Amino acid sequence: MNHESHMKRCLDLARQGLRNVAPNPMVGAVLVHEDQGSDIILGEGFHEQYGSAHAERNAINAVSDKDFSLRSESTLYVNLEPCTHEGKQPPCIDLIIEYKIPKVIIGVEDPNPLVNLDGIRKLKENGVVVVTGVLEQECRSLNKRFYTFHEKKRPYIILKWAETKDGFIADSDNNSKWISSPESRKLVHRWRSEEMGIMVGTNTVVYDNPLLTVRDWNGMNPVRITIDKSGRIDPSSNIFNDEARTLIFVDVNASNKNDTIVIDFKKDTMGQILNSLYEEEIQSIIVEGGSLMLRSFIDAKIWDEARVFTTDKTFGNGIEAPEIDGVEIENDRIGKDVLKILIPKD
Image (cartoon, rainbow, N blue to C red; front, top):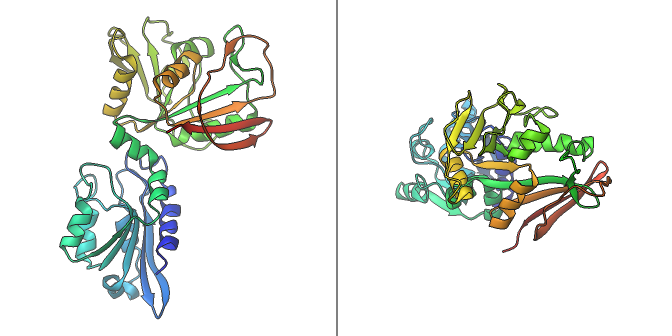
C-alpha cells in the first residue's frame, strides 16, 4: 500500500475540522482494503465537531454493508495516535480492536498525557500491527496548536500587524485603522475564525474601539482577550457586546458582564496571562496589537508565527512598527499589500 498517499488523504480530511474541533486535534482517518494489488478505500472520515464522533469511528462506520466483512482484513490510516481515554466520546482504540482491524498506520504520536503512546501500546498488546512516523512532520505541523499547548503549556501564539512602507503601525493620533487593503482585512478575518483567542492591548481598545469579531468571513468568533490594569476601558466598548466571550486581565477585581482574571502586575505578567489562558484551554491566540503588546511578546521571545503586512501608505511619523528577528517562510502579495510570515530562529 502507498502509505504516504493515504496519509495525505487523512491530512486533507483532518483540515476540514479546523477550529470546529478545538481544543481537540484535527484528525482524519481512512480504512483501506488491498484487493489484487489495488487499494480500495472502504471508508473515510474526520473529526467534524468538538464533542462529536472521532475520525476513526466515522471512517469505520462509513463502510457499506456489503464491505462489512472486509474491515477485519483492512488497514486503518490515521494522522494522530488513536485515543484510549473516555471523554465526550468512547475510546477509538476499543472500536479498532472490536472490529479486529489488523493494521494501523499512524502519522504521529499524541502529546496529550492521557493518550501518549498508550494507544500504540494497547493496539500492539491486542495483536494489531502498528506503523508510525508516516509523514510525521506534516502530521505534527497540522496540529501545531495542539502540540504547542500540550508540550509548552501555553497557547500557540501568532503575532499580526500591518505597517506602512515607512515603518509605522499607527499615526501620531494612535489611529491604526484601514492601513491594509480590503483583501488583507478579509484574510485577517479568516485568520480570526481559525484561532481560539484574539488579544490586543489596552490602548488598542481605548483608541480603536474594535469589535475583534469575524465579519468578512464565515466562521466562529474567537475569545476576545485584553488587559485593563488601571480601569481605562469604557464599559460601553465594543468588546463588551454579546457577539463573543471577552476575558479581561485586571489588577483588582472588576465587576462587569464579562470574565475578569486578577493578576499581579508586579510579577511575571506574561507568564500569568499565558498560564491563565492554558487553564482556560485556549490553545491558540492571534495578537493584533498594539505596539506595546506586540513588543512584549517579541522581547520575551514567546511567539510561534508573525504575520506582517506592509502597505503602500506612508505616515511620516507616528507609532513605530515592532522590530522582529525571525525566519521568513512565506512572502505573498495580498491586494496592494505584501504579506510576510516569519517563524522564530532556532
